[in-house]
Length: 224
Image 1 (tube, rainbow, N blue to C red):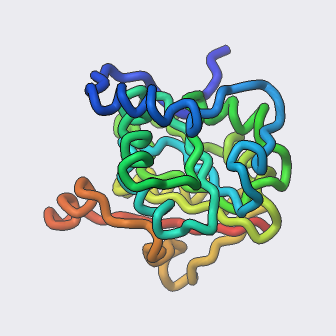
Image 2: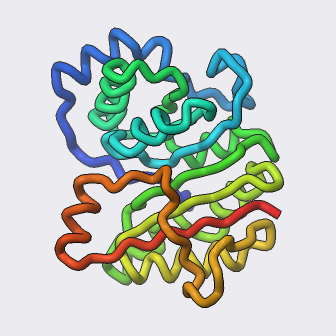
Image 3: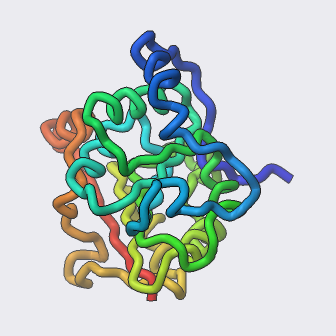
């Protein structure tokens, strides 16, 4: 049987700057995938709240959030080499120390590396919407994954998702609302969607979409 993955591999070219970041700072900030529970304190060289990010793209928002929240650790999963290289480059340029990257499928990371009740938060920003109805089953945010992710959150920990595709926003809201370990932080009169938290920056792509009249939906749920 085909298992659901958190990604689809796409072609991309790594720039010279990204390749240099791999060699210069990769040894410190890249974590190897192992089918063993991750020691957060050893990996980040400190004790601090840990936030999981699934699919950070080119790392623009990730680096901005990490800089804004130096008190938190950010464990970031992405499989695309150019994106990993881009975030490593940002880490070096901005002297960030609170990011660690796993270049591996986030589903397997959740299954094998993240203990229950271990995360203080999780971010899933603009996952692939798989627009065609016949491809909807390939969407990342589905009940089995959310059940696993919710179980890895500490009580009081949060899950923040964002999408610019209305049908996916509706699906995410339905999936998260149906998970018994999660509670919506948004008011019912807001339709179940949350105001954009201050820490999530507007990316260039999102700004362009907003100028064209597109909407973005944020969903923030907490672990009960």
